[in-house]
Length: 316
Ligand code: CP
Image (cartoon, rainbow, N blue to C red):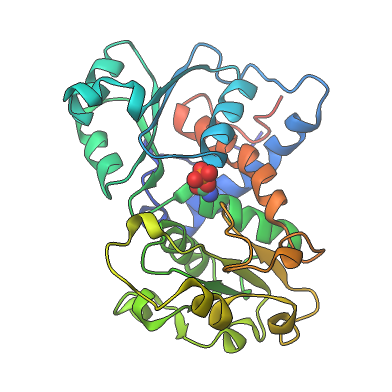
């Protein structure tokens, strides 16, 4: 059995990983897919490990997916939400994490509205930290499941044309996807209103356009991003109606795309804004495949970071 070379203790972002490390996660995830197809969806891989899920921002997909992944690997899990924690009494995230670690927690999964909190925590505690989305910085497991889905549908990431359309400025999903996709050899285009494209993003090796037709032409995968109103304290475009008239991907826009293009979205979708209702549910859409693949990808991440003896064929 071939040994897997994995040395990272934390998953803070795809900026920090090499192409080889990203490929190890994707390959390991592939071996975990069939566990969720069994009648008894459980393996003993992380028996005896305790994982704390800290979610200080709303989440449906990421939180459920991590918890399911942890349970399928037989880990013991603990869920702490911001509103029900002692943060509301004035405790700092650092103190809270150190207190939780004193309960002998092995891994901490954290989502927070401030960029950089997972990185800070990784200096304060000995547990492995997994970034489940920090501010506008990164959402590494989302990008990993996106890449896993692209690889599943298109066979490879290398040489793919991937267009990311929407609120590029406030999207941590975009940043993680840019790091991951460019490292694995995809050509990435970002598209949105000028006000929602960060200055200098071309330096990350992506093409920029403000024209949605240009963005969809030649794309193998199109990923829509919602307008993140909760992160905007100023007006970036006149009205939602005008935004959707200019940037929505709908059947008219898709006439300019490849016949076998796949439509992706990290969720939650604002139907009728960035993506037309019928296209979200069409044969082009792999949005629910992304959600399903998130379990295997998160199982792979938890397994690799756990330090459990790593060998190919871990899914037993
Ligand atoms: N994709 C994503 O992060 O969704 P949630 O906010 O529901 O976790």
